[in-house]
Each structure stands twice: as structure tokens, then as C-alpha cells.
Length: 534
Image 1: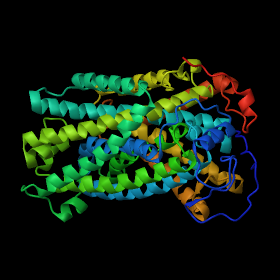
Image 2: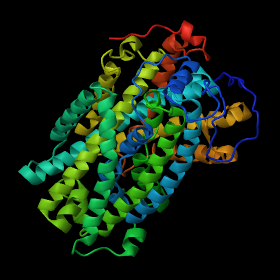
Image 3: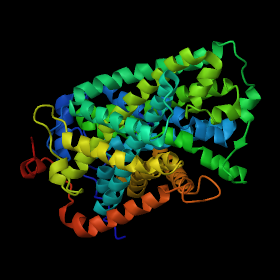
Image 4: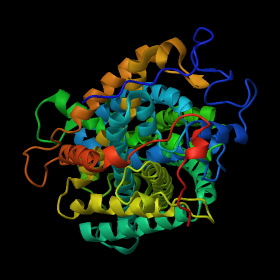
């Protein structure tokens, strides 16, 4: 692949690199209005124009709101709970706990490196826009399609997991037996709700994200505290931190442990939402990178508390895995607290997952909007339209939830399809996180950091992160159950290959002709294409 060389810097460095995580308010290409002081809304719009884009979206999200959307998308009450049974079967408590610690630490490093690049390029395009500026259009094209696959897979994974928990509640409340058909029906209804809420505008999304932060934090404390204080028998420390279980059919402990890390890797996805919402965030050059790092850090702590609290409360290992509700956490609630309280806790989890899916729909739709704005998707003129009333890309919202529905349809026929959907999310979005980091490393001193950066730690942490992502991507393309049959086959790798082939075909037939991000600098304001507004 003959990739375009990174553009030369527009300003020569005027002083040595500041200390790590230093908030540099000097004049830069991204803050053209003034040298010091806080970046206000006018500075944000000027920064966006300097990247060649006319401000179209409503800038109504503050620093907390930007953090809230990534924290909501990570949502430990979604990933940590929906894959809890997978973890019990694939490695057991030891892999779940230590995998969470290890994957969380590596995610923090990767997130910090991505946050540094986000500070320099705060646009709705996020990862693919960074890749274009640092490496050229072909890098951007591949990054954009991987990011899009991951985001749409995340909607499918989150909302399908929520549908499973709704089915478990219906089983306890009304005796409705969960089946693939009923789960898909519930899933479709949840997607419809999220499409409707997002079409209403970013103001409502922002309010729901703020609620989500407190709901998740309170929910974790409620669940972990209730299970801990309950009079039922609790497992030992040795069980929680050392017990290994293997129901995969594979014999290699290392292989099984690697597969078991999917629980943590899937949960720690989606923090690029802070980047995709940067055009709707005030002081985005600082708020968006902080949103990424803080959302990972708080989720890392809260997720450990939740997993430990759940594992200490396991009463019957085999009975939890084989629960008639179809959701192992529900069986733990029932065994420890009784059916009445279990239903109440299930509602807490369901509400958190609903809020999570809504935030993910917002992030994915902004990616669709931005990618279409630059001519990268079929029928781009439709998906890039922004509502004049709400200043929201409504068509992109409905495309996002529609594709998510299609991605989850194989679950009607395959019992392992949900794990494959979550793997699609991981192997699509995680490499997309690493590409801008790699290109930033390749650019070396030609990269001009934004106000939030890592200083001298940028390069060593960047190489660690790129290596981690490479290993992770390979692992989650591997088979997850043995014997390998049509039903147990992990089609995540196939989906990844199909997307890459599709991206290549789209590039040679459409991308070379239509895809183009705007010219840098204020002159782009006078030459920008007119936007479709409905």
C-alpha cells in the first residue's frame, strides 16, 4: 500500500516538549484565536474551521457531558454483566478478575495515547480524520471502515445484551421463556427506542448521559453492596482470585485465558465516543481527551468492584451457568436475595444498558455523519444531512440502528453468535484505535500536539499500545469453542475480512473519486461544499 507521507508541520516547535499531561494553552493551529486562557465556544468553532469544516452541529455538551458519553458507552453494567456467563465458562473467576486488571491497564495506556491525538484533531470523524491527517487517505479509509464496523457492532452487542436481560426479567415476572425469536423482537424494540431518542436531538442525549453516569455508579454500589451484606454464604478469596474453569473444549490454559479476556476487552470499548462528540463539546481540545481518560479510569475501578462483588456471591457454579433465565447474573441475584429483590436489581441493570445503548447510538451516528460528509459511504448525500430543527444527523441515526439489527440476526440460528458480535466490536474498533497512535509515532516530531498531550511518554506508551492491539486482534479472531462446527464457529474474523475487502472495493470504485477531507486552514471556509440541511 503506497501511503501518502504525513504533512509537514505548519509551525515549528518553539520550546521543548512540556511535562506529561500538561495543558498547553500556547497558540497552535487548533487554537488560532488567543494564546492563553480557557478555550471558549468561539475558539472551538475557529478550531473546527481551521480543519476545513463548517460548524453544523449544536455545541451543547460540556466537559462532564463529554466524559459521560464515553463512560455510558463503556458501561460496566452492560459488558461486565452480559458477558458474565461467558467469563464463568471461559477461564472462570481468576481470568475474569485478573483479565479485568490487565486489560484495564492496557486500555488506559491506549486511551491516553488516543486522547493525545484527539486533542490535536477534535472532529466528529474522530479516528479516520486523525489517520488522514497523519498518514493519508488510504490509512483513513481503512481506519474509518474498521471504526464504523466496531461502532455498529457495539450497538448490536449492547442492545442485544439488554434484550437478554429484559427476557430474564420477563421470565421471572410473567414466566415467559426466553427464546431467540423473543429476544430478537425485544432487541428490535430497543433499537427503535434508541433511534427515536437520538433523533430528538443532542440536548436530550446529553441529559440521558448525565443520568447514566450516576445511575451506573449507584447501580454498581447497590449491587455489590447488597450482595456483600446479604446473609447468604460467600465464596473465598481464593475462589474469586484463583479459581479457573474451562468449558470451552480447548485444553490449553493459556489459550482459554486469552479467550476469557474478551469480557474485559469488550467492556472497555467505545471511549472514542468522546472524540466523535467533540464537534458538539465546548473546550473540545481538552474536554474530549479528558473524557476518554477519565471514562476508562472510573470504569476500571467500578468494574473491578462489580465483578468481585458478583463472584463472591456465586452460590451454585453449574446452576448459575445453566440458569433458566438465560442470564447468569440474574440467577446469582435469585440465589442470594430471592426473586423479588432479583427483579429489582435486574431493572437497575436494564436501565443502565438502555442508557448505554442510547449513548453508543449517538457516537455511531456521528461517525456515519462525518464519514458521509467526506464522501466515504454509499448515498453519502443522504446520511450527512442535518436536521435544521435539532441540528442532529437523523438519517445517520436510523442507518446506525438498522445495520445493528442486521448484525445480530445470526443469533436466531447460532448460540455463539452473541459472543461473535461482541468480538466483532472488539476487533473492529480496537485496531481503529491503534492506527492513529501508530501514525502519530511514525510522524515523529512532525506531529503537532494539541493542548492535552503526554510529553516524553508519548512514544514509549504508543509502541506498547500498538503491540497490545495487534495481539488482541489476533486472539479474538480465533475459535472460541471446541469442537468447531457451523454453530460454534467464530465469524468475527470473517466479518473483519469481509469489511476489509468491502473497504478495498469501495476505495477503488468510489473512494479514489469521492472521498476527500477539506483543505486545512481558514481558506477552506470559502471553498467548503454546501451541506444538505433538511
